[in-house]
Length: 252
Length: 208
Image (cartoon, chains in turn brown, orange):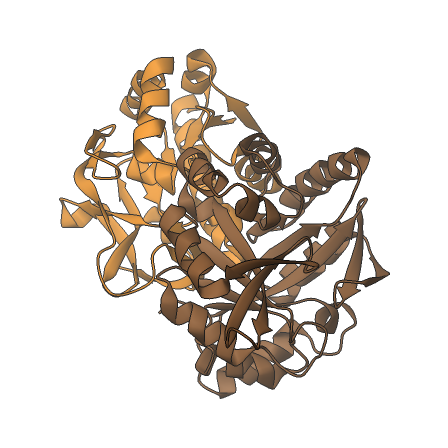
């Protein structure tokens, strides 16, 4: 039986790890490669690097981080952030990334999903969706640019379109839950997971081990991602997995 | 020396780093001479079956891989590389494979999530030199198509994803792993380590 995955996310800017609280304030928390190796040893099932560098130099640094990480760890990792062409994808995959996350670029240029899936395989293409509840619609809206810009696109529709266009997986972040530590957005996760036939990684809101059990059982997520609670050692990956095991969730 | 066959598909860096971590020299190469001179070869691969076969044919590396296999030196296909060892695949049309192992590659069909992505547990079906000293556990899979070997004896290990799924295949000196051993933590490295040990043993036999 397929195990549920626990995925730490490292926000990287100019080669250093930072974590955005509600995507705004940033704090520095160390060397990405070193952190990646620690998470590998602690039992992380995958890693996500989100490159939030704004400059060309920062992006070039990311390639080096990817190369060094690939030589250090024995679990898969995804790189996202600022990827807007198949050439960008190719560079990162050649450097050793296993999957590519695309977010804003996929909205702007949905053909990128198809192109990437065709060139590198659907399993390499992770479409990241930042969603926020729109009270007027009574459902969730997609945001881009790190959660700043509303798109007018319904998250469930976009999730289905991303799948149709060849995404291998969805990384679903709840803008409402992100940074709250009150738990994952179970309604959003369940709605998206039930609408698509590809794996869904739930993100945003993890505050304790119990939240992970909830998002797998109730949210029907295939994987769960968290950042700050792992970075600041509020809970370790081992503790999360032990808690999941006692609740009968299949983990590695 | 282990040759990592570079035919323009996928993540060669991680595989070559993993081999190096096991204390062996790895060379990422598209040179037929270098491949044929190596003690062992790994055919990695991420992407579409048809594109991969076209690349192999255009570079003439399909013949090189077959010639390598014919020498009896250990060959390991990983992920798409494993699927390429079979006769044909139905990925985006029907495409002929390398034909080193009889069987077909088909898409997962059913009311469940595809790709089969994540950590799943191996079952060893029979004794294999690849499994010596190892206990089955979780390894990392990412694939939408799976291989159906024609001969039962070629199927060495399976995993369960709504059906038994071919995870490790092999016959003689030709092996395939559907999961990514280089991305599968300690067990993945141990399995890759067993392949490397087979390469060493075969090289020792030739020298001796």
